[in-house]
Length: 246
Image 1 (tube, one colour):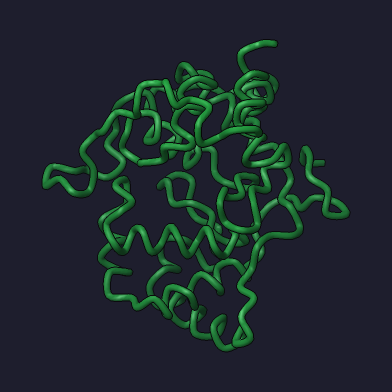
Image 2 (cartoon, one colour):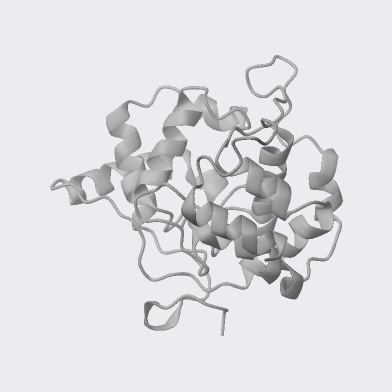
């Protein structure tokens, strides 16, 4: 059994304990530090961004990621793992580098990100492959009885304070490292925005923290409901099946 296959099996069977004996993730100072600089132009992130990613090689390194994020990149509708298909490669590289360097805390993902992608070229390759995946038709949405009301409230908030960075349709901006948020799983969006508001996502953009710091829980529900209701830009999968873009 090769290393990637062994990691994939471990992720599928026992993700919480597969690497119990592995060294803990490093802890790099984040937004809690006065000297924190969001998206500092340094480290393996910058090295990976300068490289041309090879999707063919990236398919192999993505194999272990697919155990949690699914081979299609659809993630999980319950929000435990985000949808990756359709995301900007620059954003993917940044987030994976942040996790590897201990700037973004993700104890579950860290061992796999560290072992499956051992250098900047593999970060670039994996991100390039993910970009080739078509966008799943179905994803987790807000299912409350007040769905229409919450979506309407979320739209008002989004257009007032989020559209400038994340785009009119939630398409983000790859050049500025702003993620696509349209069509992301509702529960994942809600969890991430809550953590950003509460200072628990240490690689957060301070500008975004300022925007959502005053938001109530109900407002975060509304804006997450709206964002998950948007359609992700890009090539959609046919008949709801995941795979490569046609």
